[in-house]
Length: 130
Image 1: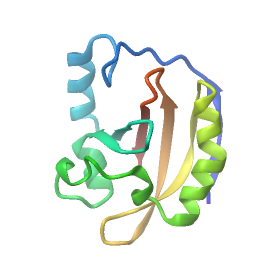
Image 2: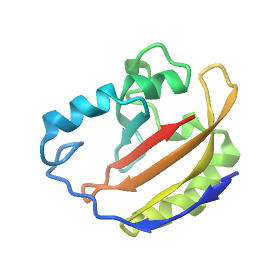
Image 3: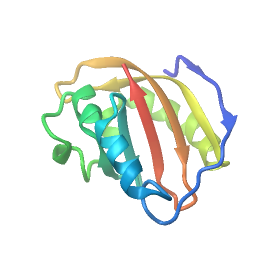
Image 4: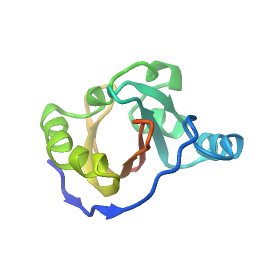
């Protein structure tokens, strides 16, 4: 279950791309970030992940994650907790930060410190550290 959470207000700018204004700079930053970064569409399908995100979850390449639903990266009890406690916060235009339990490709679990927010285009941005 969610270990701790602190919702706070945040504005998320979007120009129709994953990273908003200055897309090239933001994309380069995300690719080189030590934090795992994942972006999912309104249905929860991962449309972008950086290498650190793939590594956190035990995947050899980002391509393995693209097209998967974010729910497959969490144990079922954690999925319910995120849907009940995190999604309502970010759908109100606020960001959320806290600890969640992730599930690696091999089925093992890991504790993650995450920040999530939803852009005006419906995409959900998640930044995680283990």
